[in-house]
Length: 115
Image 1 (tube, rainbow, N blue to C red):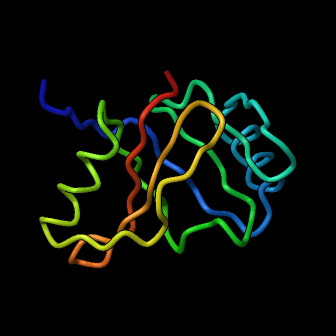
Image 2 (image 1 turned 45 degrees about the horizontal axis):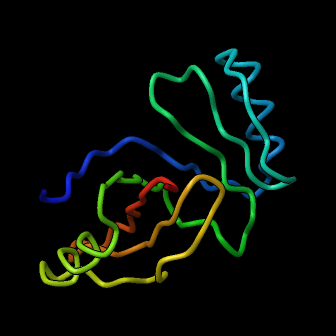
């Protein structure tokens, strides 16, 4: 069965994840699940999203994250289409993902859920 691809997550970089979280809580009444001091998953925003407050892991702009059924096939497809992997596959709570830059300069990620 061929791999499938769907944008299903948006990750916001932040220089201060707690301040960004408090802002979203106050302005939009969103709730959160924290995964350590630097990552906060947003709930009830209409799309799954999170705040990346770790400066070493944060991207320069919001990160669109594409869900797939086959991470290796996705990486091959990205590279064959001219994308450049900027962060090789790594584990995170819930699955594995890699980051890439498409030819126009946008950094994006592809993930697969843990079995």
